[in-house]
Length: 141
Image (spheres, helix red, strand yellow):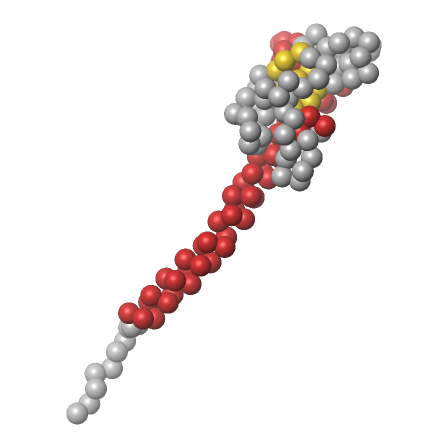
């Protein structure tokens, strides 16, 4: 008696393929989450560079003056159309809020040093004392 030819896969073969896909997905998911976090951090660092560039242009336009606060940079959209959002700081919500202070308050957003006479006068930092994925403190960037 002739055996009928099978044109498909057996149940065992299908289960093995599904198990392998599951193992590969388990390995890839943490790396994917890490890549998303790195991308958000890159966005925050790019936005920090944009604000610092706008402050530098303001400083040149006003013959050495610094803005009173970051909102000054958005007046008539001359330097920035809006204050960029800080994204990717995992310990704080995404926000474009800014505070004027000589040192970070760890409240999230931006901290702008408006203290004349201070060594850091006119500088802006991420208002966070935690570290990024590379181990650098956000407020030191």
